[in-house]
Image 1 (cartoon, rainbow, N blue to C red):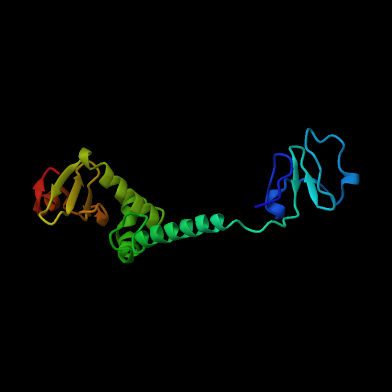
Image 2: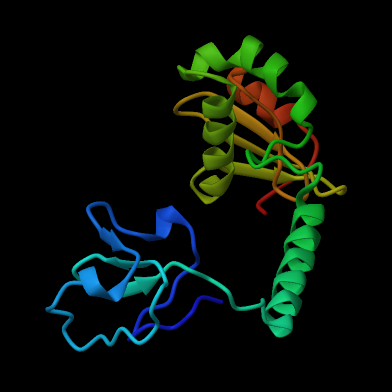
Amino acid sequence: MGTHVGAKSIFARPEFVRPGAMFWADMESAPTKTTGFSFAQQGKIFAWSGQGCYNLAMKNKPNKSRWVQILILLVALLLLALNYIGESPLHWGNINTLQDHFDRHGPAFDAMDAEDYARQAHAFYLNREQHQVKTDTDGTVRIYDATTNAFGAYNADGTTRTYFKPSNGQAYFDRQPGHKGE
């Protein structure tokens, strides 16, 4: 979209010019060592950063195909965002219950905050093959680690329902519905 000068072309915005760049408005004051860059356009504003010359006077009209590309990108981003509405990035089934679960069970896992608690619960699910697992007919997955007394219940999609340390440990897990194995 910028006017081409030598091998460089940028938008007319200051953040595209490196700190310490020199500016000039006419070719009379331009540096003599331009390493192959030609300055054919008199009266434009140029910047020299040591790695090239940039024309900062943008008079070209935007390319219509560029606008079409931008529109397609925006639509794609919107569709992607709509897929994530309502989903928790923490893999917690009902995000509205996370704070309550953290308040009740987080200290048992030395969780620093609700997000840390949710991450630990998800990590427990991801390592389920190392622990006892039961799967219910509705797809609910229950996991128990007798060594740490950690218990987690997960929805069929892998999101957490709850994660805590039951007071009666193995007996609590044994009473849970489902068949052993995944």
